[in-house]
Length: 74
Image 1 (cartoon, helix red, strand yellow):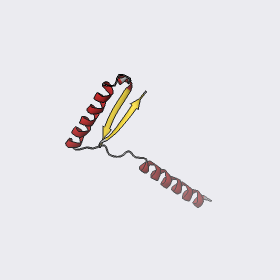
Image 2 (cartoon, rainbow, N blue to C red):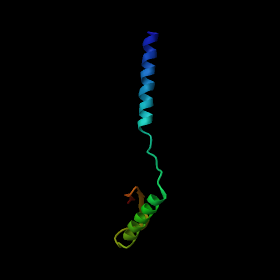
Image 3 (cartoon, rainbow, N blue to C red):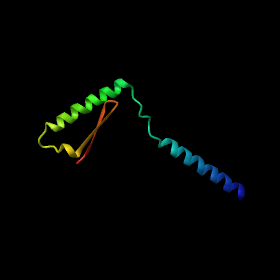
Image 4 (cartoon, rainbow, N blue to C red):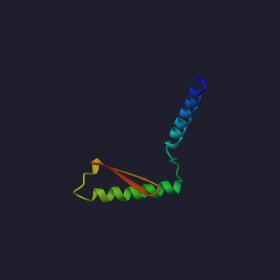
């Protein structure tokens, strides 16, 4: 019975390790050029939102990473 409990605990720890490693966030490192490009895209999107009278600018967050724009808010 003691051996069975050891195998079970090792199996549990292996699954826990796989779960933790697979859920790790990707690296958020960018080159200077990529950062400048993303900043330019973010600025263009924020300007477009600001120029639309039907949108509430203060309630919309704009984030850009690797050319992908994410809008959040209400």
